[in-house]
Length: 308
Image (cartoon, rainbow, N blue to C red; front, side, top):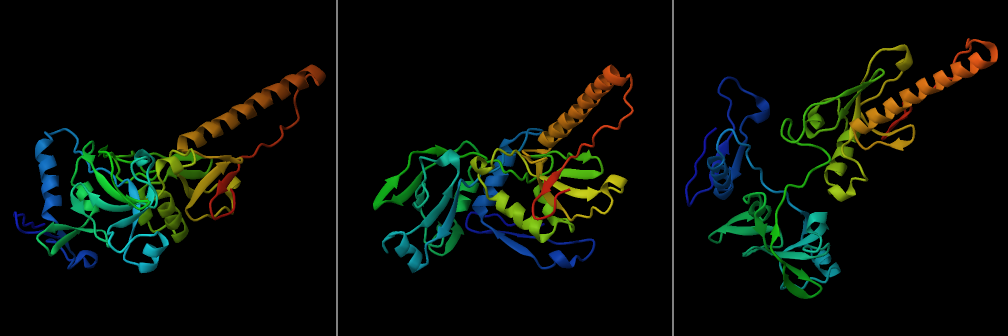
């Protein structure tokens, strides 16, 4: 990897393979603004080993460009106003930003209709999100918006890392875990699983939809649970499923893998208690319990597939 970092240049990073040629990465290059690289190096220099590296804060909103005249007209945005349309806001920034705002400035940088800001001079541009990504978690930012016909400078707000219901980096924001329920193998869904060949288009689309949700939109969930394999067993005979998200256990919505485990263990305890009670009743009536207990079933509800 080669880099060039100067005060008046843009850093150029190119991925190369020295040992062997890999077609998927051949001739792939990235232009990374020097300010972004400098922020990364500065954090590394200020973080003594073996302390943890502090990541950039999360972008607390979703936005749409305002280059479309019909969109500007629909939201009553005058031609003299430039910026991007705020379409969704994280709960941590409610009261600062509102859906329908036009974000016109970040700190003292003007935001253009396509979402870009001037990096240096008049010709070097960068997407405005980079102004937030070069900051550290717990740094403040000042947004300026156009709202209901008025220009508003928002109060300074501390930037934070916004958790995702789909963890992104192994050993950073999640640790590997699994559960084997009978003959079913279940995992909490994480972003690296999207690149697995068995993760079909339906699950990929479902994961993108959930990844875009803010924490207050998680419907009381803590993580997503995925069925990834079915072992051979007489109880699972003929059960063939692609990777699917598990949404319920006996009709109860699943909040996490640990919640599913608790529901399973509660079912097992209920079965044991019922068996003891039945044996006790049979002993009182005929001195023995030769009857087989009634079968008890566990039903897993699947997203975009039949239940198991």
